[in-house]
Length: 465
Image 1 (spheres, rainbow, N blue to C red):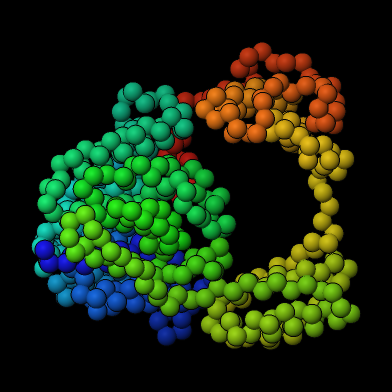
Image 2 (image 1 turned 60 degrees about the vertical axis):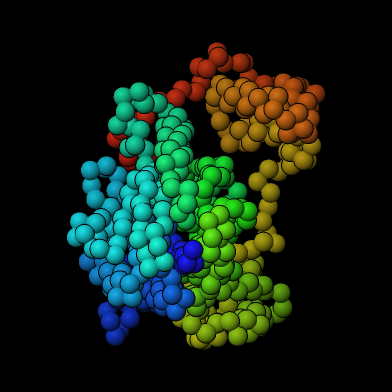
């Protein structure tokens, strides 16, 4: 067969404007230009590599309601690909999908206009794309929203956790069913936007992704699939090297300081024969992010900071820079900020200067710190709840639930917690630190779970995004 060449791009986030300022020549935020420049580099690389199809694995835009300017700029890039006879497949990500099932995604305009070289997927399904190298089967696995299951009566009174699990099972089963219908003689790939267990995430994004539906790797261990192209996680990484390779392309440019050490780019994929895909990551010149750690130790506080900046002077040109100064509070007035900022003039953007004082940080746990070090997991949880002044009845109920979960885990893996799980006793260090336990609450009286309404789920999804 003629080798099929694919460009795998994800998380272009057109419209991202953090750490940016207005470009005086265009009137647009310079960070918009940054992301477009990185996207252009990827597209030109794909054209040079003579790819047959470009797949975008979600999050085309920063928001689900992009401005006309953002739409215009992305459309220019689609036209550039079409002019070279390259097919484009757009799979919706969480930033592209509206809350209501009846509303259009941010990229549905291409489907409405029936642009011949563009395929848009907002639901799990198979698309046969005819390229210059022959047909390829692309199974779309877009971001799943809870409205998929909320619309079904049997899920009306489910909790958020139950809705998430139902959504995972529903989309996973649909994916498996689609793969079963594929032509086994044609090259086949999955293009998806999802969060898989085991994916590594930057520290600054960890808290914002806590409510994601989580899929296991086995979801994509499917017969007849040659490659799995994923988006959503901004760090380029490979979760499975054997066939089919499961690859996150990563975001096209850096979003925050949690990504400062990550390479940005796209993935070139070549399927020379059925069941055998080769790929490699190709970097783009994304704007650098640099963190400078300075510590005041000598008699000249400002000089200490200037020296710390000088040690990284070669990295500052056109970078987004974050300066952290560790200094005692009584010496903060010695810092001459105008001199410090003068040393950062090569940077494109300087984030607000952060001042810390690690040497004066005191333990929040005071007298119970030694007890924590000796505590079992249940005892440590009890200490935490006590320290947070959680109502005694609620604290006891939470400890019961925790113990139940740990017992279930221990039954599956007796070494999971490295110990036998027993009730919290008065002879333990943690118990001694806590003191006399309160009276036990009636079973399940302290914690209740409210069934999820459609309105509340939509609100929570909006906050999560």
